[in-house]
Length: 397
Image (tube, rainbow, N blue to C red):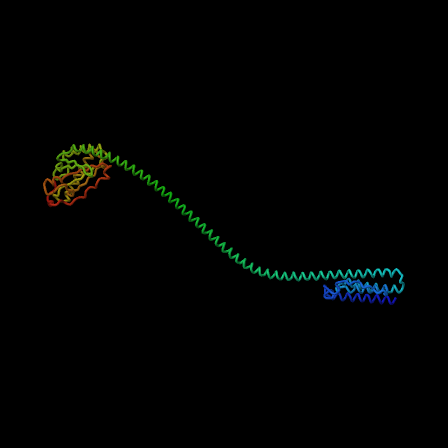
């Protein structure tokens, strides 16, 4: 009994020491684990060995394959040693007992269990080692990837900055293009509107010009027709006025119209009053003027150069006024008549002779159709006294 207890105690102590050694080793088993990763083949006991010795030898042989970190296998190894001790004690007591058979069977089971547990731990160690290698490789890859990422990040940042710069430039250019486009469109619209307005003005002016041209042509035509009528009327009037032709009344025609020159014999000497013969002739003229309402008459009084210019101008104006007033009395509209005294400024003959001076003393009726009057030549400016005119001495006759 005492021998059995000592054997069991020794086996447990060995198991505890085995476990302690495993607890301080590396998880992978280190170099020791590598040496016992393979489970050695069981050593056949010598023929002379007892069952207990064979059991112990098999257990010890299995324990050699236990990795240093296989804690479970070490505890199983301790139990197997204890089982071998109990088997040795049972053999001493009763080799044929059922206990010996049970302990012998347990011994085989412990050996197989230790081998299995050792192999399992060895696989775990190899797996852990592989995972460690993979982790180291992954860390290396991560470090390399980090370097790549950093390099890419720097480059990407540069590219992003360049991209942002280009985008900003593009945005500015787009804004400028938009602004220029809007400005161009506004200018184009303004130019188009101006061209349209100019075209409309041109069309309006062309139409206006065409209308004016038509109007002008119509007016020219009407004027030509009216002139033809006026010339016909004036020719008729000329024929009728020729009936008044005498030594005292001369009927002529020039650019100004029909000229009736009435001698001063028809006036009293140095007087402006009308004689009866002059009134008779003027009444006939009034009859003709009443028929031709289109005629205007300019009454011009003239003298020779005898006497003062002031007196002659006054006398000529009075005679012209009296002729006008008589025509008005005969029913001629005063608006058709103008009276003007020219004095000695418009001689028609030489004042050096008696005959010349007599011709210059006259009253002219310049008869002009209104339609022809606008094209008539203007009345001649008063002329200077004719050469050889006598000095002012006595009033003109």
